[in-house]
Length: 81
Picture 1: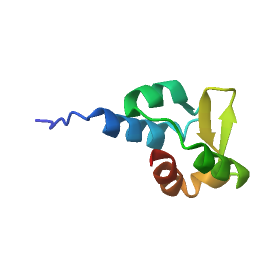
Picture 2: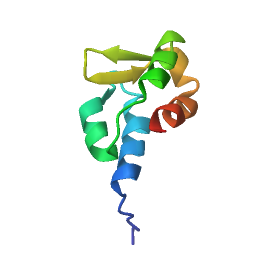
Picture 3: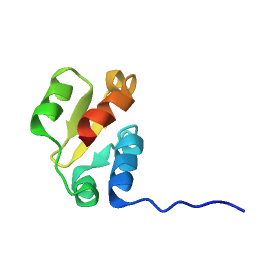
């Protein structure tokens, strides 16, 4: 028998960040905002971009850079706050 756990919206949003930032296509920020009920902090996002840990893809997607992948847990924690 397989145990299943139903995740709340906040947990789904955190999982989306953790798993989606690893992907070449990154995450859809609109989807993340609808799950989490919040927007990325512009100052935190800018800090991570300036230090080369994340990058925007167009206006609505975000992904980790190779440098950001090395500290993915810290990037996710910074964006999820």
